[in-house]
Amino acid sequence: MPVRRSVARGLLKAARWRLVGDMPDTGIMVGAPHTSAWDWVAMVAISWANSRRPQVLIKSSYFNGPAGAVLRHTGGIPLDRDNPGDTIRALLAQAKKSDSFLLVIAAEGTRSKGEYWKPGFLRIALQTGLPVTMGFIDGPTRTMGMGPTFTPSGDVAADMDIVRAFYADKHGIHPQNRTEPRLREELTGFPESKQVS
Image (cartoon, rainbow, N blue to C red):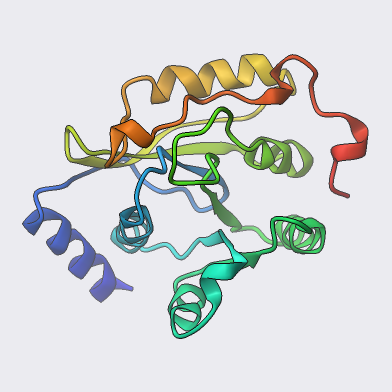
């Protein structure tokens, strides 16, 4: 790990990207804004620079072919978005047994501009009691890393107000693809039928 840390920090410096904050040992990490395929490289660089190896939920189709081995080696977990239950239940069980569980989720769910974020990061944090850390990449300032950590309250709108305040000036690599941090569930909360047990 010390070699990876040195390599990652050296490459970021050479590429003129500034790394800020420290990646936690435990929790749910939001990766946003998710606007480019380069976001994966940024996440790996942030992880290595902090001597961490988090798990990352990634659309299962990306694991086809040789890329699958690379994704798995760097912490990728295939997620079938049409049937995510088994994967999420396994992760929840792992989180409850482990003292150092770190899961990265790209809450926008797509690199294209959308209408809403996906609520999985907040739902998993509420079910496990794990804190949420806000990771980011900001192209205009060439800055990436970790923002603040918070423990979700269960008030979805209030929790998302914290998220919105932090990401208000974070633009991603391609700002035109950025999705405003908001959830459909802010008005309704999480229905019991949607909880993953």
